[in-house]
Every structure is written in structure tokens, then in C-alpha cells.
Figure 1 (cartoon, rainbow, N blue to C red):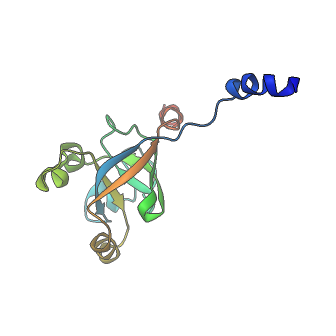
Figure 2: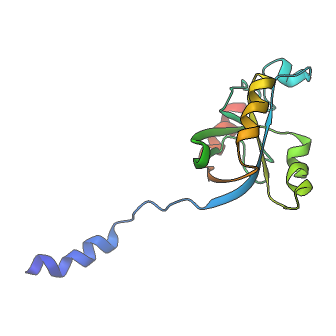
Length: 140
């Protein structure tokens, strides 16, 4: 019986992991082109472009190194790149929404266009930016 009296105190001191909030974004895709960076297979942070893993973001919204999960598509991506249209939110604003843009890298143009035809324009993402500091340290 005494144990039951202390149970709330024990449970009250346990901290359960908090579920990260979801944020709506406009999803777009990009692919290897004649652009000097993507043609070289490099991101703006100096890392490799990896299909279905690398995303271009506005680093003021999603710091470089952030893990960006897209549950609706079963993707876990990493914020490693940037693009002027991403920062300006061009694709989202053209559709009447002022939300961040997440631009998914898919190496092959045909594959990228086929993918985006099937994907929703707007998706919810879960962002874990705890890794962003580790990536900044690697670049120094």
C-alpha cells in the first residue's frame, strides 16, 4: 500500500519524450543538371547529393543538418542544400500559401518528375534540428 502512495511521485519525475510538432511545407524536387553544384554532385554545405535523402531548405527556417521526416511519404531527409526559389518560397506562394519549401533531391530528372506527380503539393514534416550543430562543427 505504501508503494502506491509514492507511485505518482516516481512517475511525476519521469520525463517522457516529447513528440515533435509537425509543420506544413510545400514539397518540390530537383535533379542533377548543368548547374555547377548539382552537376558536381555537391550541396552548398559541401556534402554529397543523395537521392531521396538530401533536401534544399531555407537554413533560417530549418538549420543545416536538421533531420526532416516526411511521414506521408516514409522519407527521412537531411537539410544539406539551399536554393534561391526555396528561400523565396516561390512554389508555395504561387499556390497561395506562405509556407516553407522543402526541395527533395532525386538524381534522375524523369524519376524526380514521376515522383512529384504522385506526391501531394503540401506535406507535414517533423523536424529534428539537434544535429544541425554537429554539421556546423564539421564544416569548420
